[in-house]
Image 1: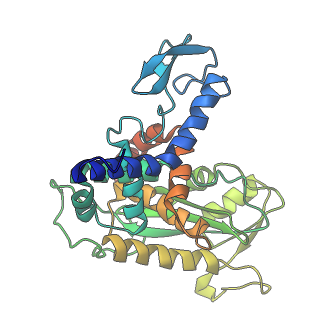
Image 2: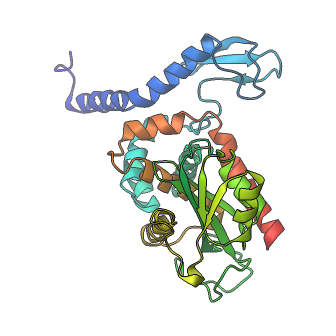
Image 3: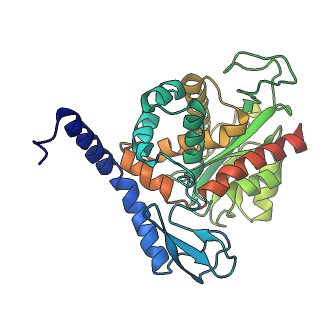
Length: 334
């Protein structure tokens, strides 16, 4: 039957079959999600209730209605795919994202608006979850690094503009610097958090770790007083390294060189690949770099990107929360 089609119809058939094949990876994850919802192994994404029922179908997607909050939902609800119209382009987009293709080239290749390509990027990056701190064990290194506050993309600046990716005139840890806390143990556990503007406090360290470190863990840091307070509050053994006294390694094993090396690679990656990023979206790029670190001994494939991005069913809330959190940083620190 395919041979009897015209050349144009055969090409259209080939495109349809290719798109159907490319959507398999994301459909498998969402199919499992839908199956879990039908069997009531998942809860309502709006209120967390487990008392809901099927509520018809829309575009081949099974919908449900919660008896508690009266809201409807489906397998897309909460994921970054919620509200995405051209879902058949998702895998092509992820393939370009893995290659670090620019937004201009991505929008041209996929024939989508540049703003759409930008929104997709940050919805995907918001869906990547870092560990919650409960994975850390043994010797844990922690240190902060600073990024110049950037308003890249903002056309209404309250200061003179500077070339993107370059450093500002001020040095040190002023209020115009975004502090990123990086923590890493000697295995594979890693966490990178955009914490505050200016100098960090003990509460910033608590929020960065999320889950308090195990009492058997050994915290290695610089001489910042906030780390000392955190260690006392959680009964941790604390190794202090003072660079002003040229204390870089103690007893041959205690140091923060792994974290400092990460700082260096992170800054080069952001400056050289993206020519600097807006502080508003810095946490999303930290999630991206975190993914590279976790999979640096494996090849990052589209299937892995799809699976990891669709595992988080609160990604849309996280995407909105990141914007709110950035505004809170500005109002409290600047």
